[in-house]
Length: 373
Image (tube, rainbow, N blue to C red; front, side):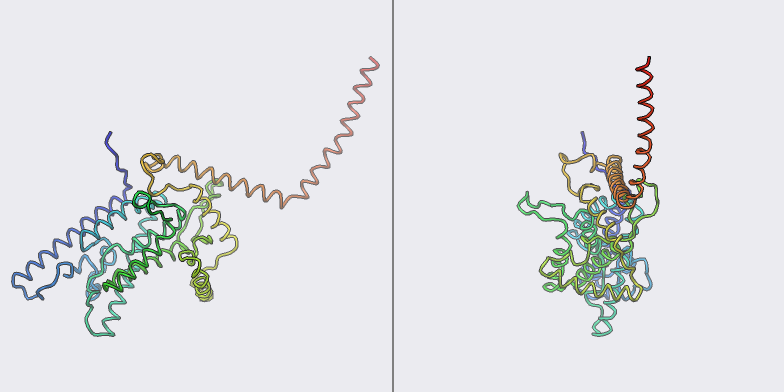
Protein backbone atom coordinates (compact mmCIF):
# COMPACT_ATOMS: atom_id res chain seq x y z
CA UNK A 1 0.00 0.00 0.00
CA UNK A 2 1.56 3.34 -1.00
CA UNK A 3 2.38 5.78 1.79
CA UNK A 4 -0.02 8.68 1.99
CA UNK A 5 1.40 12.10 2.79
CA UNK A 6 -1.19 14.12 4.66
CA UNK A 7 -0.35 17.84 4.51
CA UNK A 8 -2.86 20.48 5.69
CA UNK A 9 -3.88 23.11 3.11
CA UNK A 10 -2.00 26.11 4.53
CA UNK A 11 1.21 24.14 4.94
CA UNK A 12 0.85 22.80 1.40
CA UNK A 13 0.39 26.34 0.07
CA UNK A 14 3.45 27.58 1.98
CA UNK A 15 5.59 24.77 0.58
CA UNK A 16 4.47 25.58 -2.95
CA UNK A 17 5.17 29.30 -2.52
CA UNK A 18 8.59 28.57 -1.00
CA UNK A 19 9.63 26.46 -3.97
CA UNK A 20 8.10 28.82 -6.53
CA UNK A 21 9.53 32.08 -5.16
CA UNK A 22 12.96 30.62 -4.42
CA UNK A 23 13.32 29.06 -7.85
CA UNK A 24 11.98 32.17 -9.57
CA UNK A 25 14.37 34.41 -7.66
CA UNK A 26 17.27 32.09 -8.43
CA UNK A 27 16.42 32.10 -12.13
CA UNK A 28 16.22 35.90 -12.24
CA UNK A 29 19.53 36.22 -10.41
CA UNK A 30 21.20 33.79 -12.80
CA UNK A 31 19.95 35.71 -15.82
CA UNK A 32 21.26 38.98 -14.41
CA UNK A 33 24.54 37.32 -13.46
CA UNK A 34 24.89 36.04 -17.03
CA UNK A 35 24.36 39.55 -18.32
CA UNK A 36 27.14 40.79 -16.05
CA UNK A 37 29.60 38.39 -17.64
CA UNK A 38 28.28 39.24 -21.09
CA UNK A 39 29.51 42.83 -20.84
CA UNK A 40 26.81 44.51 -18.79
CA UNK A 41 27.58 47.76 -16.97
CA UNK A 42 26.92 46.10 -13.62
CA UNK A 43 29.82 45.30 -11.34
CA UNK A 44 31.59 42.10 -12.51
CA UNK A 45 32.57 39.35 -10.15
CA UNK A 46 29.36 39.62 -8.12
CA UNK A 47 28.03 36.21 -7.01
CA UNK A 48 24.48 35.39 -8.13
CA UNK A 49 23.16 35.29 -4.54
CA UNK A 50 24.26 38.92 -4.02
CA UNK A 51 22.27 40.25 -6.97
CA UNK A 52 19.16 41.99 -5.64
CA UNK A 53 15.67 41.07 -6.82
CA UNK A 54 13.84 43.88 -5.01
CA UNK A 55 10.31 42.86 -6.03
CA UNK A 56 10.64 39.40 -4.42
CA UNK A 57 13.39 39.68 -1.77
CA UNK A 58 13.74 42.57 0.66
CA UNK A 59 16.27 45.26 -0.30
CA UNK A 60 16.31 48.02 2.37
CA UNK A 61 17.08 50.77 -0.13
CA UNK A 62 14.10 49.83 -2.32
CA UNK A 63 11.62 48.38 0.18
CA UNK A 64 9.46 51.48 0.11
CA UNK A 65 8.64 50.80 -3.55
CA UNK A 66 7.82 47.09 -3.00
CA UNK A 67 6.12 46.85 0.42
CA UNK A 68 4.87 43.29 -0.18
CA UNK A 69 8.43 41.98 0.06
CA UNK A 70 8.21 42.18 3.85
CA UNK A 71 6.03 39.05 3.51
CA UNK A 72 7.36 37.36 0.37
CA UNK A 73 11.05 37.58 1.32
CA UNK A 74 10.56 35.05 4.11
CA UNK A 75 9.82 32.45 1.41
CA UNK A 76 12.89 33.25 -0.71
CA UNK A 77 16.05 31.23 -0.12
CA UNK A 78 19.35 31.98 -1.85
CA UNK A 79 20.83 28.46 -2.02
CA UNK A 80 19.68 24.85 -2.22
CA UNK A 81 20.88 23.99 1.30
CA UNK A 82 18.84 26.77 2.93
CA UNK A 83 15.89 25.86 0.70
CA UNK A 84 15.97 22.26 1.93
CA UNK A 85 16.09 23.34 5.60
CA UNK A 86 13.20 25.76 5.12
CA UNK A 87 11.14 23.15 3.30
CA UNK A 88 11.61 20.65 6.12
CA UNK A 89 10.79 23.34 8.69
CA UNK A 90 7.54 24.30 6.99
CA UNK A 91 6.58 20.69 6.26
CA UNK A 92 6.90 19.39 9.81
CA UNK A 93 6.55 22.59 11.82
CA UNK A 94 3.74 24.05 9.74
CA UNK A 95 1.82 20.77 9.66
CA UNK A 96 2.13 20.36 13.41
CA UNK A 97 1.09 23.91 14.28
CA UNK A 98 -1.73 23.97 11.75
CA UNK A 99 -3.26 20.87 13.33
CA UNK A 100 -2.76 22.26 16.82
CA UNK A 101 -3.94 25.83 16.17
CA UNK A 102 -5.91 25.81 12.94
CA UNK A 103 -5.19 27.39 9.58
CA UNK A 104 -6.30 30.92 10.46
CA UNK A 105 -4.12 31.13 13.57
CA UNK A 106 -1.13 29.71 11.70
CA UNK A 107 -1.50 32.32 8.93
CA UNK A 108 -1.67 35.11 11.52
CA UNK A 109 1.44 33.76 13.22
CA UNK A 110 3.34 33.52 9.93
CA UNK A 111 2.43 37.05 8.84
CA UNK A 112 3.65 38.48 12.14
CA UNK A 113 6.85 36.46 11.91
CA UNK A 114 7.44 37.66 8.36
CA UNK A 115 6.69 41.37 8.75
CA UNK A 116 8.11 42.28 12.17
CA UNK A 117 11.60 40.67 11.92
CA UNK A 118 12.05 41.86 8.32
CA UNK A 119 10.97 45.37 9.26
CA UNK A 120 13.42 45.50 12.19
CA UNK A 121 16.25 44.12 10.03
CA UNK A 122 15.46 46.71 7.35
CA UNK A 123 15.57 49.56 9.88
CA UNK A 124 18.88 48.33 11.29
CA UNK A 125 20.35 48.16 7.78
CA UNK A 126 19.28 51.72 7.01
CA UNK A 127 20.63 52.96 10.35
CA UNK A 128 23.93 51.19 9.74
CA UNK A 129 24.12 52.82 6.32
CA UNK A 130 23.47 56.23 7.87
CA UNK A 131 26.16 55.74 10.52
CA UNK A 132 28.92 54.26 8.38
CA UNK A 133 28.05 55.73 4.94
CA UNK A 134 29.41 52.54 3.39
CA UNK A 135 26.28 51.44 1.61
CA UNK A 136 24.09 48.58 2.72
CA UNK A 137 26.83 46.00 2.08
CA UNK A 138 25.88 42.51 3.24
CA UNK A 139 22.42 43.76 4.18
CA UNK A 140 21.58 44.54 0.55
CA UNK A 141 19.25 41.51 0.49
CA UNK A 142 17.22 40.26 3.43
CA UNK A 143 15.45 36.97 2.83
CA UNK A 144 15.02 33.49 4.21
CA UNK A 145 12.91 31.63 6.77
CA UNK A 146 15.31 31.98 9.71
CA UNK A 147 12.76 34.00 11.69
CA UNK A 148 10.10 31.33 11.08
CA UNK A 149 12.45 28.58 12.20
CA UNK A 150 13.26 30.43 15.42
CA UNK A 151 9.60 31.13 16.19
CA UNK A 152 8.55 27.55 15.39
CA UNK A 153 11.02 26.32 18.01
CA UNK A 154 9.47 28.74 20.52
CA UNK A 155 6.01 27.34 19.72
CA UNK A 156 7.27 23.78 20.15
CA UNK A 157 8.76 24.75 23.50
CA UNK A 158 5.32 25.94 24.55
CA UNK A 159 3.40 22.91 23.29
CA UNK A 160 5.71 19.95 23.90
CA UNK A 161 8.63 21.15 26.04
CA UNK A 162 9.45 17.72 27.49
CA UNK A 163 9.31 15.82 24.21
CA UNK A 164 12.63 14.09 23.58
CA UNK A 165 14.11 14.04 20.07
CA UNK A 166 16.63 11.31 19.23
CA UNK A 167 19.39 12.26 16.79
CA UNK A 168 21.84 9.91 15.03
CA UNK A 169 19.93 6.74 15.93
CA UNK A 170 19.63 7.65 19.57
CA UNK A 171 23.24 8.65 20.17
CA UNK A 172 22.11 12.19 20.97
CA UNK A 173 18.88 12.82 22.85
CA UNK A 174 17.62 16.29 23.52
CA UNK A 175 14.42 17.82 24.80
CA UNK A 176 12.48 20.28 22.67
CA UNK A 177 12.72 23.03 25.30
CA UNK A 178 16.49 23.29 24.69
CA UNK A 179 16.25 23.84 20.92
CA UNK A 180 15.51 27.61 20.86
CA UNK A 181 18.63 28.54 22.84
CA UNK A 182 20.86 26.23 20.78
CA UNK A 183 19.44 27.71 17.59
CA UNK A 184 20.18 31.27 18.75
CA UNK A 185 23.65 30.40 19.97
CA UNK A 186 24.47 28.66 16.69
CA UNK A 187 23.45 31.66 14.59
CA UNK A 188 25.26 34.07 16.91
CA UNK A 189 28.51 32.10 16.70
CA UNK A 190 28.25 31.71 12.92
CA UNK A 191 27.58 35.45 12.55
CA UNK A 192 30.67 36.27 14.60
CA UNK A 193 32.86 33.96 12.52
CA UNK A 194 31.51 34.45 9.00
CA UNK A 195 29.78 37.82 9.29
CA UNK A 196 26.25 36.57 8.52
CA UNK A 197 24.63 39.33 10.52
CA UNK A 198 21.33 39.18 8.63
CA UNK A 199 20.60 35.66 9.85
CA UNK A 200 21.41 36.42 13.49
CA UNK A 201 19.17 39.50 13.41
CA UNK A 202 16.32 37.47 11.94
CA UNK A 203 16.89 34.64 14.42
CA UNK A 204 16.73 36.87 17.51
CA UNK A 205 13.86 39.04 16.29
CA UNK A 206 11.91 35.93 15.26
CA UNK A 207 12.51 34.42 18.68
CA UNK A 208 11.37 37.56 20.52
CA UNK A 209 8.39 38.17 18.23
CA UNK A 210 7.17 34.60 18.54
CA UNK A 211 7.55 34.51 22.32
CA UNK A 212 5.88 37.90 22.89
CA UNK A 213 2.92 36.95 20.72
CA UNK A 214 2.44 33.53 22.32
CA UNK A 215 3.04 34.84 25.84
CA UNK A 216 0.78 37.90 25.80
CA UNK A 217 -1.52 38.04 22.77
CA UNK A 218 -2.47 34.68 21.23
CA UNK A 219 -5.93 33.39 22.09
CA UNK A 220 -6.13 29.74 23.15
CA UNK A 221 -9.22 27.64 23.91
CA UNK A 222 -9.87 27.06 27.59
CA UNK A 223 -10.17 23.45 28.69
CA UNK A 224 -13.22 24.21 30.82
CA UNK A 225 -14.89 26.13 27.98
CA UNK A 226 -14.99 22.94 25.89
CA UNK A 227 -17.21 21.30 28.46
CA UNK A 228 -19.33 24.25 29.54
CA UNK A 229 -19.94 25.70 26.08
CA UNK A 230 -18.34 29.09 26.74
CA UNK A 231 -16.72 30.64 23.67
CA UNK A 232 -14.23 32.80 25.56
CA UNK A 233 -10.63 31.70 25.42
CA UNK A 234 -7.42 32.60 27.17
CA UNK A 235 -5.23 35.44 25.99
CA UNK A 236 -1.56 34.56 26.11
CA UNK A 237 0.17 31.90 28.17
CA UNK A 238 0.85 32.88 31.78
CA UNK A 239 2.25 29.49 32.76
CA UNK A 240 5.45 29.45 34.75
CA UNK A 241 7.02 26.98 32.30
CA UNK A 242 6.81 29.51 29.44
CA UNK A 243 8.43 32.51 31.09
CA UNK A 244 11.36 34.10 29.30
CA UNK A 245 13.89 32.84 31.83
CA UNK A 246 12.92 29.19 31.20
CA UNK A 247 14.61 29.34 27.79
CA UNK A 248 17.98 29.57 29.52
CA UNK A 249 19.82 27.12 31.81
CA UNK A 250 19.29 27.41 35.54
CA UNK A 251 22.66 28.98 36.48
CA UNK A 252 21.83 32.11 34.49
CA UNK A 253 18.03 31.93 34.41
CA UNK A 254 17.74 33.59 37.83
CA UNK A 255 19.66 36.66 36.71
CA UNK A 256 17.67 36.84 33.47
CA UNK A 257 14.43 36.51 35.44
CA UNK A 258 15.41 39.47 37.64
CA UNK A 259 16.07 41.64 34.57
CA UNK A 260 12.98 40.56 32.64
CA UNK A 261 10.77 41.09 35.70
CA UNK A 262 11.94 44.69 35.89
CA UNK A 263 11.30 45.18 32.18
CA UNK A 264 7.86 43.62 32.57
CA UNK A 265 7.01 45.96 35.47
CA UNK A 266 8.00 48.96 33.37
CA UNK A 267 5.85 47.78 30.45
CA UNK A 268 2.91 47.20 32.78
CA UNK A 269 3.34 50.67 34.31
CA UNK A 270 3.39 52.13 30.79
CA UNK A 271 0.20 50.13 30.00
CA UNK A 272 1.89 48.36 27.12
CA UNK A 273 1.35 44.94 28.72
CA UNK A 274 -1.58 43.74 30.81
CA UNK A 275 -0.43 42.15 34.08
CA UNK A 276 -1.23 38.51 34.69
CA UNK A 277 -3.42 37.75 37.66
CA UNK A 278 -2.99 34.78 39.98
CA UNK A 279 -5.93 33.11 38.23
CA UNK A 280 -4.25 33.61 34.84
CA UNK A 281 -1.10 31.92 36.10
CA UNK A 282 -3.12 29.04 37.56
CA UNK A 283 -5.06 28.53 34.34
CA UNK A 284 -1.86 28.73 32.31
CA UNK A 285 -0.25 26.07 34.48
CA UNK A 286 -3.31 23.84 34.05
CA UNK A 287 -3.13 24.25 30.29
CA UNK A 288 0.56 23.38 30.32
CA UNK A 289 -0.12 20.27 32.38
CA UNK A 290 -2.88 19.21 29.99
CA UNK A 291 -0.55 19.57 27.02
CA UNK A 292 2.12 17.59 28.84
CA UNK A 293 -0.34 14.74 29.43
CA UNK A 294 -0.75 14.27 25.71
CA UNK A 295 -3.37 16.78 24.63
CA UNK A 296 -1.56 17.40 21.34
CA UNK A 297 0.06 15.11 18.75
CA UNK A 298 3.81 14.59 18.89
CA UNK A 299 6.22 15.88 16.29
CA UNK A 300 8.13 12.83 15.16
CA UNK A 301 6.15 9.68 15.87
CA UNK A 302 7.12 6.83 13.63
CA UNK A 303 4.82 4.54 11.75
CA UNK A 304 4.75 2.19 14.69
CA UNK A 305 4.10 4.89 17.27
CA UNK A 306 0.70 6.54 17.22
CA UNK A 307 -0.39 6.62 13.60
CA UNK A 308 -3.97 7.48 14.38
CA UNK A 309 -2.95 10.86 15.85
CA UNK A 310 -0.29 11.67 13.33
CA UNK A 311 -2.37 10.54 10.39
CA UNK A 312 -5.02 13.12 11.09
CA UNK A 313 -7.00 11.44 13.89
CA UNK A 314 -8.63 14.68 14.92
CA UNK A 315 -11.69 12.93 16.30
CA UNK A 316 -9.63 10.93 18.78
CA UNK A 317 -7.74 14.09 19.67
CA UNK A 318 -11.00 15.95 20.33
CA UNK A 319 -12.23 13.13 22.55
CA UNK A 320 -9.00 13.24 24.51
CA UNK A 321 -9.26 16.99 25.00
CA UNK A 322 -12.93 16.67 25.98
CA UNK A 323 -12.05 14.07 28.60
CA UNK A 324 -9.38 16.35 30.03
CA UNK A 325 -11.84 19.24 30.08
CA UNK A 326 -14.47 17.20 31.90
CA UNK A 327 -11.90 16.02 34.42
CA UNK A 328 -10.73 19.59 35.09
CA UNK A 329 -14.34 20.80 35.38
CA UNK A 330 -15.25 18.04 37.86
CA UNK A 331 -12.24 18.87 40.00
CA UNK A 332 -13.19 22.55 40.07
CA UNK A 333 -16.84 21.78 40.94
CA UNK A 334 -15.85 19.42 43.76
CA UNK A 335 -13.37 21.96 45.11
CA UNK A 336 -15.98 24.73 45.00
CA UNK A 337 -18.57 22.52 46.69
CA UNK A 338 -16.20 21.54 49.48
CA UNK A 339 -15.07 25.12 50.10
CA UNK A 340 -18.23 27.13 49.53
CA UNK A 341 -21.06 25.02 50.89
CA UNK A 342 -20.15 23.68 54.35
CA UNK A 343 -23.15 25.34 55.93
CA UNK A 344 -25.51 23.90 53.35
CA UNK A 345 -24.16 20.43 53.99
CA UNK A 346 -24.74 20.86 57.72
CA UNK A 347 -28.24 22.25 57.17
CA UNK A 348 -29.11 19.36 54.91
CA UNK A 349 -28.62 16.97 57.78
CA UNK A 350 -31.55 18.48 59.75
CA UNK A 351 -34.45 17.12 57.68
CA UNK A 352 -33.30 13.48 57.93
CA UNK A 353 -33.09 13.80 61.73
CA UNK A 354 -36.59 15.24 61.91
CA UNK A 355 -37.94 12.61 59.61
CA UNK A 356 -36.50 9.68 61.49
CA UNK A 357 -38.84 10.00 64.57
CA UNK A 358 -41.95 10.07 62.38
CA UNK A 359 -40.73 7.05 60.50
CA UNK A 360 -39.99 5.21 63.75
CA UNK A 361 -43.48 6.03 65.16
CA UNK A 362 -45.15 4.71 62.04
CA UNK A 363 -43.07 1.57 62.27
CA UNK A 364 -44.11 1.11 65.89
CA UNK A 365 -47.79 1.54 64.96
CA UNK A 366 -47.44 -1.10 62.25
CA UNK A 367 -45.80 -3.48 64.67
CA UNK A 368 -48.52 -2.93 67.29
CA UNK A 369 -51.24 -3.55 64.74
CA UNK A 370 -49.51 -6.73 63.72
CA UNK A 371 -49.32 -7.94 67.34
CA UNK A 372 -53.02 -7.30 68.02
CA UNK A 373 -54.03 -9.08 64.87
